[in-house]
Amino acid sequence: MDHVRNLAVRVLSEVNEEGAYANVALARNLRKAELSDVDRRFLTELAYGAVKATGTLDWMIRKYVNRPVRKIAPMIRNILRLGFYQIFFMDKVPASAACNECVELAKKYGHPGTVKFVNAVLRSAVRAPEKCAFPHGKGHATEELALQTFHPQWLVKRWVKALGFDVAAAICAFDNEDAVFSLRANTLKISRGALLERLQAEGAEALPSNWAPEGILCTSHGALDKMPSLAEGLWQVQDESSMQVAHVVDPQPGEFVIDCCSAPGGKTTHLAALMKNQGRIIAGDIYEHKLARIEENAKRLGITIIDTELLDARNVGRRFAGQADRVLVDAPCSGLGVLRRKPDARWKKNEDEIKKLPQLQLDILKNAAEAVRPGGVLVYSTCTINRMENEEVVEAFLSTHEAFMLVETGQFLPTKKRAERMVQLYPHIDGTDGFFIARMERR
Image (cartoon, rainbow, N blue to C red; front, side):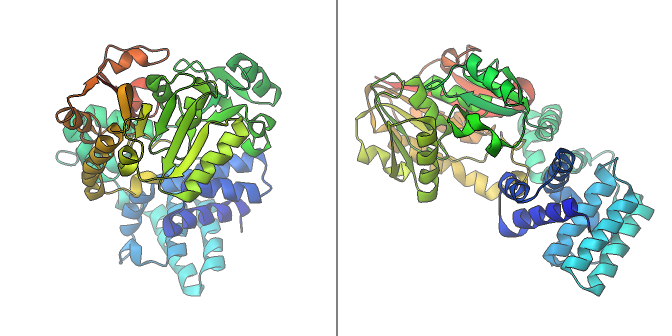
């Protein structure tokens, strides 16, 4: 049995059956295994690809079995997904190898009956691929796009309705591109230029970001936990779009800042760096284990001004009424702007949950606003491209809070200024994760 494929099906099982995040499950299995660089890349492509294509693969498998895919034993279901992904979407993998290795996996995780079942289904797919051809032609464009690009059909329909078919197709295509590894230099310890030299000395290939003065794009690197510069706190993993937020907040040394929904702490630690580690930051969240992550990152980065607090963002205003110079509400959201980085996320969302988010976001924003002192700043941000969670939330807030004024948020972006009162970054246009930011000031 192939060791790499065995690891891949374990990753799929952790993600699909145990609810693990794909990046966490993959990293955990990579750490345990002694793999060559070639095998590491193959495992990543195999696991991420099959996770990303889950819905499409299930649709295809259903064409060859006489029962719903959800009723197939979980491990066998994941073995079939792995096999179908190799047969239909990995040109360099011979179909015979995909079938044979999946049969070997079935022997490990199933019984003689499931071994025959896996073998029959995969051989049938190889012999008659036309059975799972995607629908095509008039009236099927949206369904075909969803299947081709590994997205839930309800989500593609939503984007087509809101943005048009061509834009929806462009976003779907972007979501399937490989995300460049992005990091932020910890300017409390090192300059970006010096960090670029250090990364090169550690065997990485990196270049400066055009979006943020601290940003770096790493196009090639080894195992992150083996890079001394990370352990020394010289940098923090963070996407270029996420780096925009702290600059829009524009905190000054000595100020009192509240980050309401702070975990895992990328923006919180960025705020601290911009404040030169002078002042006070309250980092609130409702999960203790997430607060522990922030504390670990702060310690590694040499930051001492962050106080974590187990706190529901809807209680921030009552807890710190009129005290804060600046408040950041990086609200819980649908995350539709970061699907490129989270291959499993597209299948873990549903339309009903997304429809409930704007009210929660508005409740948090209204309460957080009470913590802003007169003359202070309130920033609202999300990592989604859904207008209901973005512009409409800000507009609803401003309609009932005359003390707050929306300013031209685009002018606070660090390097790419925009003449926009509210900034919406789109993946297919800006080449970054999708992000929304609005800056308001209290009179």
